[in-house]
Image 1 (cartoon, rainbow, N blue to C red):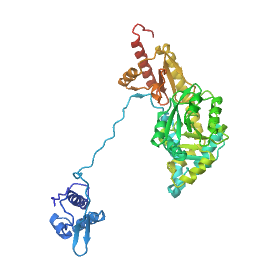
Image 2 (image 1 turned 90 degrees about the horizontal axis):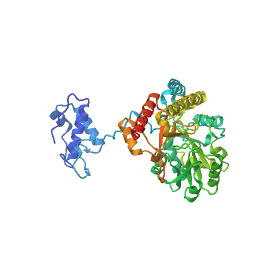
Image 3 (image 1 turned 45 degrees about the horizontal axis):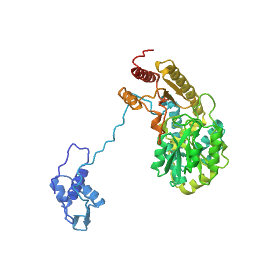
Image 4 (image 1 turned 180 degrees about the vertical axis):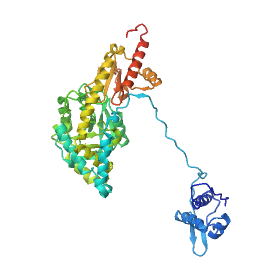
Length: 472
């Protein structure tokens, strides 16, 4: 047996130090299988520790199966099928790769979380925890807390003129869980059609869940019908009210074509991702496709990521009745992936009217910020070389360069200046021969001084390309 040395200043109890040392001796082979260990009294005397210290160490080793006792004979080393190779003496240390950080990041489509009424949210959370008592720790409804599903249904009726049953609302932890649920419910064997260019995360989520994905080209009205009909797509995931990243809005004529396509065969569905429908500045939110769906072919998806904060991790689906019935029969034994306190607090936030007042305030704020940034571009040196493409909605717009700059070089120079940029071309899975040199400007979480710095960088970069032009 290797010498056992106790660390007197360690916070670890003596019995645990002894247990670990004996365990290591057994694993390393210093004790052979079947070898008898010193008696508890003998070992206590040898190590100058109390008998209870040795008893506790032996008891833990016996509980884990490293040793066993034989009545009136003592403790013996148990037989162990040891793994090949040297015994691990130290835990393997793994450090997650550090993410690239930038002073200004225009790649991330995020809201301004600093304007959320956190004091009101905290007050509602305290109310929930106080008033619910022990009930808050019970196992909740698999599809989400009833009161939250009722509030979501009531909100959709007020804001979107959408009449849905709370029993067809399914709450889950954000887009990641919603996509995983859809693949499990509809079947990974189905082909999921996605917009190209499109939000890459959705594609990655479906693929990680085992689904096959097909990338469909777009025109100025959304998904091209000829490409859709020529494909093997069975489930179509689209954002008809404000596509990311192009900003395209699908008109009524194309929507009815998509509904007709879905109704032509059993098993076809349209997933309507309404991710930022509330943030429309020039008019009321557009009616969702599901409102025109008489054949129950549309699955409505939305989250609270843009209107409250991405970290809330609450999203929901509105499923056709027959799909909700299938989900209930197959997955009602599962648990909701959003904690009950969070759901109940959100329900109160919506019931009190705070949610809609918050949306109203944020729409005014974002529209003011958007108009300011657009005005700054118009008044800058850059205005002669770019055009802005946007539909007065959402938290991003496209800045298209007329002269097609070297996108890789521009992004590299921006990184050196602490600015993260991305172009429209990065969102294609099947890149066409010609793609506009459109820079994506996610302005939701951008401060005015940050935008000034970005605009100054872009103006300077453009001037360097034209040393003969020095106009202001």
